[in-house]
Image (tube, rainbow, N blue to C red; front, side):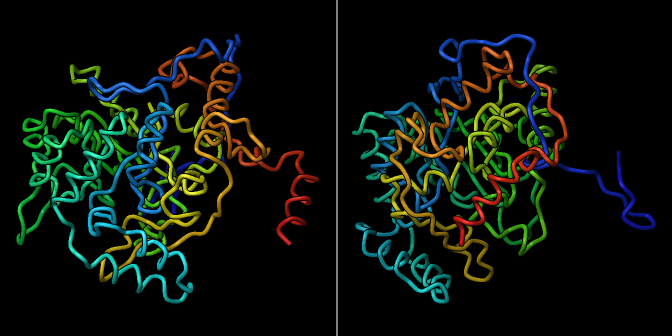
Length: 386
């Protein structure tokens, strides 16, 4: 139901992760008997979690290790890995920069052009590591890069912008034709980001294999503050998932929905999937693992914009290994470790054998779900923060 904001202006209520909860099912299932596989066309992996295409998270070594553990890590083709032959000194400079200088430094370091030969060599390095290779490109370069990316051996091509639509108006440059891009590609194409039902339907009609959901929810992204644009992730996911279901119902090909950003703990991931996602893309939790490229620091993908940087450096420190983050054993009780175990346990409690069944889980609006009966926990957390 719409809420009246003023005369002639109404708004729909939207919900984020902290405002909803899952309702247990009528039966429970052994977590060891639950299937959480993620598929994009012919590409299938056992873990439905992707590491976001952030420079502070994914480099070739990280991508290889993530693949060995059953997930996917997205390498940013517009990032430092493809601008510098050896970016280690640049990473050290960004990590050590004073807070008041870091945004200017990021803009300066991202002015160096992307080098096509580095794109091929990074993809080949990941392939030599034996795991699946996923890469991300800005829309303006996607068509030109597609051929070399496929030839180098990538398994999945992500075209990612702050907001993507099937129709874009510009008198100064040509619009990327997603349907033509898909026709030219021998590997699945995923596009994002999107938060709206009808936009998602149009993008799905182009033949894409997957769609990313989320505008500005990530901890390092300031798009919502700078532009005032965004939709809370539970509502955005449910809307795009409804578009996927209607697209499929009318004869369209399967499209994988990925909730991208805003998830800090295992409970956020379970809520994203219950809201309708097939998988998730996560940034900040991965930035805190020992294998992350940024050594406990990361920054938003929109940072390179020379006129309006919409990302900032976040320091999270090193908290666990990648294996511990995904599979445990958890050494903390805040939901930031053993994400796969948490997901399977939640599905078991809700009586879902597959993610498709989990998408039918009942959700309730529960604004007090994180605070109800937790007074002593909150007091302890405040004391620790001091």
